[in-house]
Image (cartoon, helix red, strand yellow):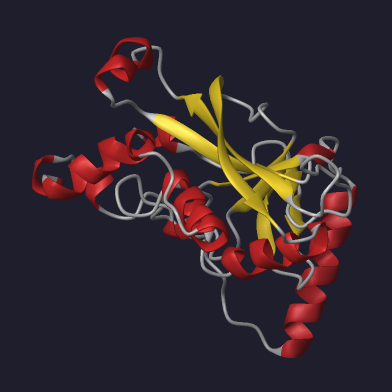
Length: 220
């Protein structure tokens, strides 16, 4: 799993034309999907694959982008079920990444909600913008049903999935600079460098390196 945006990507085209194929990659969050799937329901994660990379949305504790990219059909922690061809787009790789950057401002990690704003809502919005059609209804049907009976759900699921934000005390500019320098010095002494915070191009904290996001199955 890599921080979005990233500079490494592979092209994917449709028969040598300028259009890129758009896929919805669907994953199982639980083995019970083997039974629920045949009834048109289940607990799924989904990502959008285009130009050789897959983009998804997950939860973390910070008011910054929850959009991430992974190698197609290999999102960690999930069991890949199937890939669905959604259509194609004439957006170039750079144009598509610009779209992801725009959406990442809307899909912050601390706004992830199992019922109202999950990974499937993200992929549906991308699909609607690029093809004018929604993703298959069964992918997010459980959340749709949950929205009608929200009062029956546990309180931890009714509210925003990630509620505990880190404390950021107010600093003056000088104090903030000194604090940042001290923090960087401390981080350089850490033996496990895989747990430092990565940043987006604008300097905002995005997510942790090795375990960046908490997905639906960890919030249930």
